[in-house]
Image 1 (cartoon, helix red, strand yellow):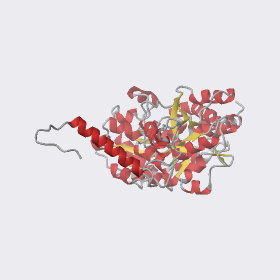
Image 2: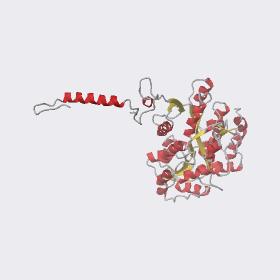
Image 3: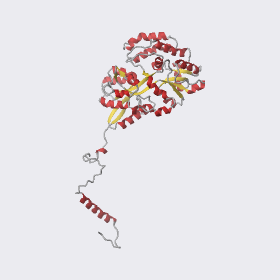
Image 4: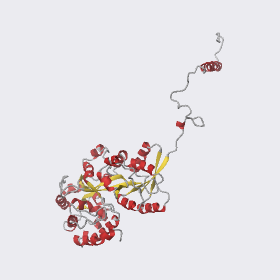
Length: 444
């Protein structure tokens, strides 16, 4: 031991040197005792890289999976949230979006036919699924889709995304038609709001009461198949079968068309296309402008209503014998030539999962395909949101035969004068029926 007298001065550097020598000596003595000095939290021996650092500190390279859509992924909130959730649940993968805007379906078909580099997954509209499947441009999901998987979906989903008995797509979201009521138009006209159990006659009378000459109309619908097919079904008719047979010659279909023509021509309670275009190009523009008291549409409309501060109510579509509606199911598919279909299925499985479908609902992208999605918050957002969820139980798929787009174009051409009251319903339907067999067989 060092002794210091009163005259001695304390030297910190000398003291530290002595202590260092002491600690080295102690460590040397304990080294041969066999006791481990390893921290329990350290990685196991042999789990280090060549640099000596732990492998857990070495960043792993994530595998990229490409998803193509027609949406702008830099601004789309649903796509942003889907990417974040997918990567959280799949830490080994990174979702990379690709976008094709105008002419999406034709360009994608050309890519598949050309055999070039293809994405792992593609967004595809429901009406294009049969076309792509028929051309062999997308893969059947038969080896992946199980009964357990489909049992968790609303029935309309499986019906909509099946071609020739095989599943070819999973749901992105569902659009089931409901009726929106513009509260301002109703209140200004002093017309009572209809109940949920209203009939076609109730609907027509309400439209008449709401109509104020050159100021507001009771109802508006776009004069295309998407604008009125739900009325054909609601009155017991239809547009076309999935295997390509026209249903317009059915009496019930003719009755529905006559009902709508009478609202336009006799009642003058439905706005014409020329009148509607003065207020904007979207189907909902006249409703937002307060020029139409009622319009049929899906959940995605509500985002525009809220943005424009339009107060609205929701009702099921009016019924004849029973409540019904049509659903359009947008989807995700695996393109033919995808480099790793099993990896693509991992993405599809997520996109149709409870977690992804929750995002679809929460962002108003559309209604969920999965029955296990939590609708509690959604139902609290608006008192009428229950009608959206209820519609999933009774909706039927919008008809999408292989040559459905050509058939719809023929129908629109033959019906243009009918909607103007310049051609009878019977003559218009007869013209369609004459062309239908060839059009639906792909023989234009």
